[in-house]
Image 1 (cartoon, helix red, strand yellow):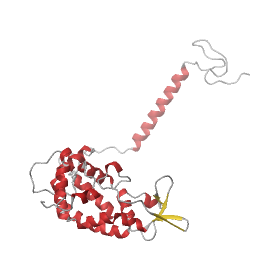
Image 2: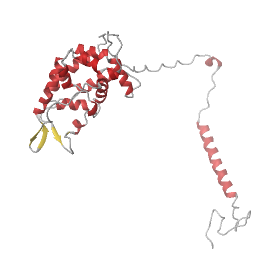
Image 3: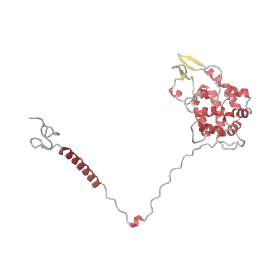
Image 4: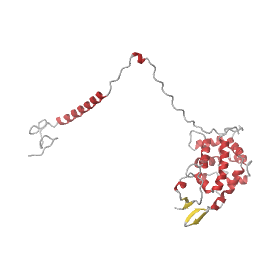
Length: 291
């Protein structure tokens, strides 16, 4: 006896067009129609069951329709784009274009230190762009070395060996002492006054970096806050050298921002002095007074 085939008919074997299969089989063209009707019927059944389970909506009376609708709560206040309004300069004379601003900025800063001392600390070319790029990247992992505003410290990076481990040499902090001493002699009010004078150029460069909204001054304050939050390390700082450059052995230290790593490399004593300078600058930057 042939095996059953529910698609071709009750029993196997070909059938002529429009003819029933043997032993009372169902015509082939009726099977798709039957499946379609079954699917439609199942869908109608589910729809009917859902309708029965749903409560019948109540039609409000004319008196209820006259009642005022409940007030829609107002949207939450928008977060302001500017958190720290930049200081405003009292000098309203026209500014030079960015590409010709190095001379005027250097001249303004020589009121705080000699030009030769400035050249030992800062890169005096493209100062506006270097400053904006440096500030923008300090809270990040890396500051592009070719665009840093500050010169590299003299001498070589110092390490020490103890117990088979490489550590950051305490003497390495001496490389940064000239920078720290200059920073401590600077009057925060005067520096922020120079900053306010040339701030429109910095804001222009900030826009050119791809920031269509916000103020560069917010970015400066954020960079300062990030450096102030640098951890204070007690004891030797362990290093590893997976390739050419040294890294912090502690993954948490290695994941810190570029600015916070600088605060660790200069040593705890220098870091404490720099933080004092940064706090004074932050107070002046957020005071909102005319300079």
